[in-house]
Image 1 (cartoon, rainbow, N blue to C red):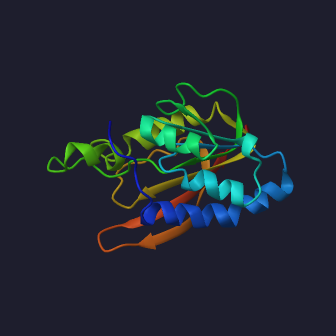
Image 2: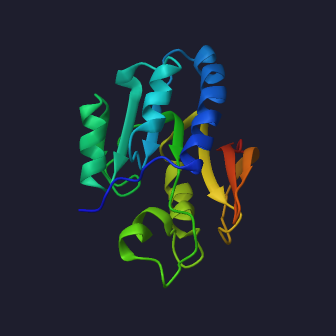
Length: 184
C-alpha cells in the first residue's frame, strides 16, 4: 500500500482558499455540504470543520486505504472511490487537489500516484470535471488546484476564475473556482 500524501505547498495553498471562501458560502447556506475527492491526510476536511461546516456534512474519498483510515480516525466520513465511482448525492462544495504533473519517466513509481496526472498532467482533472457536474448542486462551487505545468486542462462548460496563485522555484500553483454555467 502506498504512503499517504503529506501536505505540501499545494495543500496549504488550497487550505488558505478554503479558509477564505468557505465561510462566505457557509453564511449563505448553513447546511452546506462539502466533498473532497482525494482526501489524503484530511487537511481540507479539518479546514472545512474549522470554518463551521458540520462534521455530518463533510464527505471524502480516496483510493489509498491508509488515507481512508487516517480520515476515519479523525472522525470523517471517507470511503474508497476512484473519483466519483462510489459517491452518492450532490454537494455545495467539491474540492480536489489532483495529481497534476505531466508524466516523468524517471519519477519513482511510488510517488507517481500522488503527483502524475497522466501524460499531459490533466487527464485525471479532466475526468474529474467531466464527472463532477452530476454531483455539484445548483449554485455549487468547485475548488480545483492545478499547476502551470499541467497541459491542456479542459474546463468544459464551467465558469472559472483564478482565485489564488503561488510561484515555486519550478512551477506556479493555481487554484480555480468553478461553477456551472446557466442554461441559455
